[in-house]
Structure formats: structure tokens, C-alpha cells
Image 1 (cartoon, rainbow, N blue to C red):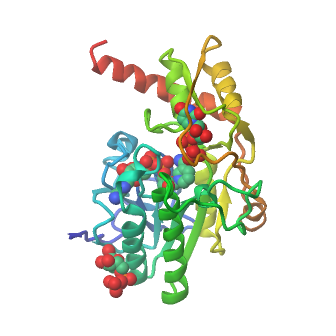
Image 2 (cartoon, rainbow, N blue to C red):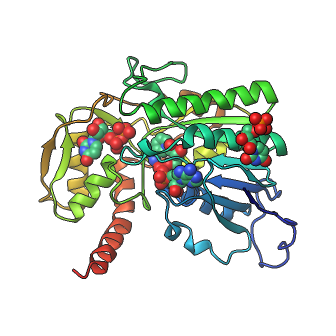
Length: 338
Ligand code: NAD
Ligand code: UDP
Ligand code: UDP
């Protein structure tokens, strides 16, 4: 069992020059589980920039120290290597619970969604912290309603290859609401739709990272199935804004956080081609089981109650991740001695 003393949070208030001091002038102590991952590290950057104190808990299963290394030495930042499947003691005001193996190649391996969420809810209950869970559009399964509203209960195969993730997140939402109703924990539920941006894992099997890496490496982009299935892609900074609006707002949710711009995988390949390499090619591969045919968020609830909507289109967002991917692929190749 890990025990961390947080210490006096005012200790550094005069020590770091002119820094912002959190929302409404009040500095918060915030835990971000999975904060060394793709979404988490962008969230941490924004919280630190706002002036909050941030503790990242991460076991580096898919996250990387490189994502937060620029914060090392900042007295308002702390990194704990810890698996949230094990209990932990901390004293904070807010918990953003992102820890979860989130891509198809990784998520089969881990009970994080259930045990990790239970521990973080237990922590929130003990210390009276507000708790936000990053759930997923996958709770809608292969949806029979289009676009998906938060009121839709979903169409999920409970014994399929994806169910560890889908059903894991559904249980995580259930636990969250049970702690809210049964133990008065203040909770927030975000249902995140496909998100992309710098710091995504290069080879985690998600479609945007695959296509971008493949186009940069001059390999064919692998389109699964006929490529006519659709997804709606959100740029990561829009998501971070949405998560913070949800956490600091007055509504439990669930709220869909996604960009309603809908693309087939063939259209996505076309945009990647235009952005990276006009000579890029595609290659068709068999699709995975239970792949949802279409997905697009209805975000009217988030617009109305959180005053939030995404600002960055796919054509604007994609070039912003390409530089990061180019640099990392280059470093990888150099590391291999190529
Ligand atoms: P990611 O894999 O980059 O980040 C997840 C982080 O959690 C990693 O840093 C990983 O090391 C950490 N982690 C995993 N298991 C852990 C454990 N047991 N203990 C401690 N840390 C652990 O993925 P991401 O895309 O940044 O996803 C963040 C959250 O957003 C996840 O909860 C995911 O389900 C949710 N989400 C993401 C998307 C998306 O498109 N990126 C879509 C829907 C939902
Ligand atoms: N927990 C934790 N940190 C805390 C409080 C609880 O990690 O500060 C864990 C605890 O070990 C348990 C889970 O959260 O596994 C749920 O805690 P809760 O108190 O709700 O349940 P109980 O321990 O009573 O079963
Ligand atoms: N996909 C694809 N090529 C790839 C990776 C994924 O065509 O190299 C497809 C996949 O079959 C799915 C869509 O892209 O229909 C989105 O997949 P991803 O794993 O990114 O997200 P999710 O299925 O979780 O929405």
C-alpha cells in the first residue's frame, strides 16, 4: 500500500514567481489518474497552467514519462508510479479518473475499469473529493440510434472481444452513480468520443494514430473492412476544455464529449493523405468482430449545460499532431540505428 503525504499546499505560493492561482483565484489540489497518458498529460498541462496543484498517478502501462517530463521540477507537479488497482491514500479536492488501458490492443489485459474505479471512488468518499470518470462512447456499443444521445442505453455484446472495455466502462459508470446515490460522492461522468492529437501512442492500433504513422513511414494505410464505417474525431484540446467544464460545473452527466463531424474510414484516409503525403496508399484488411458501424455524438446536452462545444475540425487538428509524430518516428528510427 502506497501512502503519500500531500503536505501544505500553500507552501509554494510565494516561491514560484507570478503564477496563476486556479479557478476563481482558488488553487485546487487535483489527482489525475492516467495523467502520463495521451489525454491525461494534456489535461495536466492545462490544470498546471491554470495554477492548480496536480498529482499524477500512473503505472506507465500505456503512458510515458516523456509526456510529462517538461513538468518535472515544477513544485506544483508530482508524479506517482502506482497501479490504481491497488488502494492509495491522498488528500485532494478533485479526482480526474482516466487510468485505463484504452486502445484495442491493450485493454484486454486489465481489470482497471472495475477495481481502479472502485478504489478512486473509495478515496473520493473518504476525503470528500469531487470525482470525474472518463467513460466512453463505446458504452453505446454498435448503436441502433444515430447520432447517440446520453439517454440511449446502448447495444453492447456482453461476451464479445471488446466487452472488457465496453462493459468495464459501463460498470465504472454504475459504480460512480452508486457512490453518488449511496455515499453522496460528488461525481461527473464524461462519455468521450474518438479523440486524437499529439502524444497519442504511435502503435496502439487506433485508426488516426495508425494512418498518420503509416503515412509518415510510407507504408499503406490499413483500412479495416470496407472502410465505410464512420467515426467522429475530436481534437484533444477540445476534450480537455470539456472535461474541465464538466468537473467545475454543476451537472453530474453523463455528457457526450466529442466532435459531431462524421467521417468514413476511407474519408479519414483521404484527409491524412492530403495532410501528410499525396502519394499515400491504402490497403484493405479484415475488420475486427463487433466493430460499431457508425458513431457520432449528439452534443446538445453539453452545449446547453456546460456551454461547451468543440472548436477544431479534423482538417485543422490533424496537422497539429503530425509534427509530434514525425519527430517521434524519427527518434525511434535513430534509436534502431537506421
Ligand atoms: P492512454 O492509454 O494514453 O492513457 C491511459 C493512461 O492510464 C496511461 O498513461 C496508462 O499508463 C494509465 N493506466 C492504465 N492502467 C493503469 C492502472 N491500472 N493504474 C494506473 N495507471 C494506469 O489513453 P487515453 O486515450 O489518454 O485515454 C484516457 C481516458 O479517456 C481513458 O479512460 C479512456 O478510456 C478514455 N477515452 C479515450 C478516448 C480516446 O479516443 N482517446 C475515447 C473514449 C474514452
Ligand atoms: N480506498 C482507497 N483509498 C482511500 C479510501 C478507500 O484506495 O482513501 C479503496 C479501499 O481500499 C477499497 C475501495 O477504495 O478497496 C472502496 O472503498 P470503500 O470505503 O468505499 O469500500 P470498503 O473499503 O468499505 O469496501
Ligand atoms: N480501423 C481501421 N484501420 C486501422 C485501425 C482501425 O480501419 O488501422 C477502423 C476500425 O475498424 C474502426 C475505426 O477504424 O472501425 C475506429 O477504430 P479505433 O480503434 O480507432 O476506435 P474505436 O473502434 O474504438 O472507435
